[in-house]
Image (tube, rainbow, N blue to C red; front, side, top):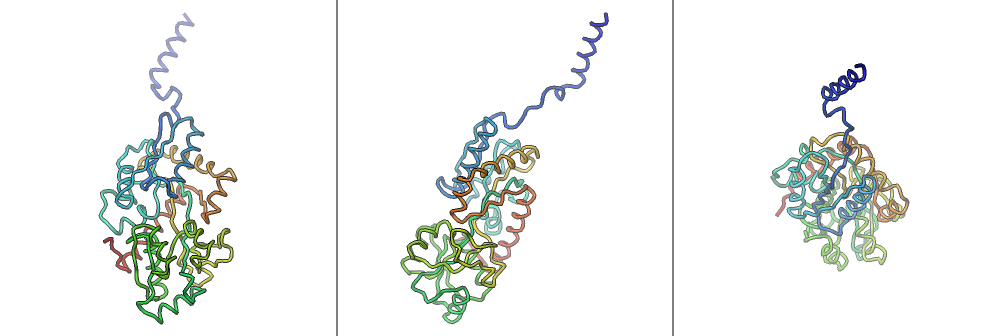
Length: 323
């Protein structure tokens, strides 16, 4: 009788406790996709694949990078924002779609409210370069030259609304330098024309300018980072040049649709940090001038908010439009 009574009691407890009494399922239990809103082979894609490999190793599940380019990143971002907030869709966002695009076009989603920040992976600092034929060796000399020759100094950008465009307009607002904007369809043709001397100035990433600097095809005046970068120790920062407001570059990080469980956000954050623990992985990016913040979700959220406000102000004051 006693044994039978105990069995009945245990059965009743299981029914009363319901599903919560069973062992909790851990994340992830099925494949996860990471949407990258840019084409394969670029900096964003490479970052996503490094992280995807680590997340897969840490979970035993597949993390698949899905490149969905188009509309300056809006196509991929919208697909991610409209996905279920269950942790099985992540998004590799960056300065363009997360901070600048909302001020340039009307979007069907809001990066500020439709995504939750997970981790700031990397920033590739911008670099101010000039054609070596210019008699310019410092930022101060460039400002003076542009002011003394209004409308005669041109700067190349990767396109209207690009990082290079916005940084150059910020530079003009801060310094009063008079420079004419020449937009291109991407970084490659812009670099080709500054090397050829058809334009004189460009704000580009350290990563993409290294081959030109190595052969003397362009001259670096300043890097837009808090400290000098290891691969260009002789190049001063904009802070040293007297323009502390000019810091930053092309940055990327992981987001998830708003409502994604906090335990998923914390797990992805922790595993993504581990992706950069091997020295060879860190060096791969540091050798390109990148910084690897790899902080908390809160730190990344604050960074994104600040960037959105900063570039919104620049876009408004410089009257930047997508054409």
